Length: 240
Image (cartoon, rainbow, N blue to C red):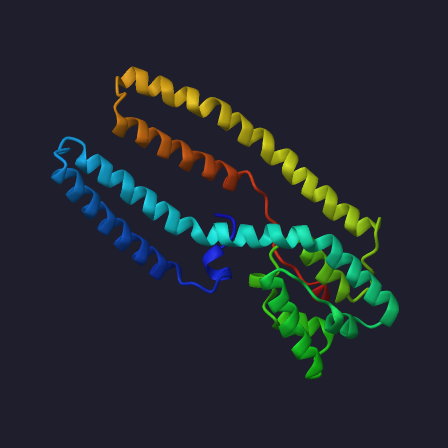
């Protein structure tokens, strides 16, 4: 994966993997036991393996889904966030006061602003306050990162509607979608056809085989979405 989603959420990857493995094995044993009691001995191990793989996959990819959901919410809020930053910068002419006045609705972004605001009130400048508020794990949307970097930028930049910086952010988002959607749509179109051909050639049309193929399709589509999505690392303008 391109990002360490576990680290962003403050979770330990090894412990998470151990928990996911233990839960998957427990679920597999339960499914096998239930299948044996229902006289499904021929497919009990297959059903158990499918259930274990599904549970392990869902648990191991949960941090990625949480981070992406938060980033999506921050992206929706970014236009209002940028407009507020622009208004406060023009009204006060101070980056520190702008950080103190900024508010957000998304939980992680709101926590970031609250910590940054507390640091400013303790005497830190805007750049040091935002850097110490853990932006890597809280400011997840690229547009929100651009707003924060513009507020604390050493060049006195402003986040204005129609500015080159905001246009660049919007253009980058559009390019990301243009790159991701065709690949994902191609996989969505050809993958079911290939799986049906595989099932017909293998002469496996039972419920267990169909469930396994559907589960495989979901995993491949999810991985395709993950691989085709670009990501830009956090950077501080104050370090330039």
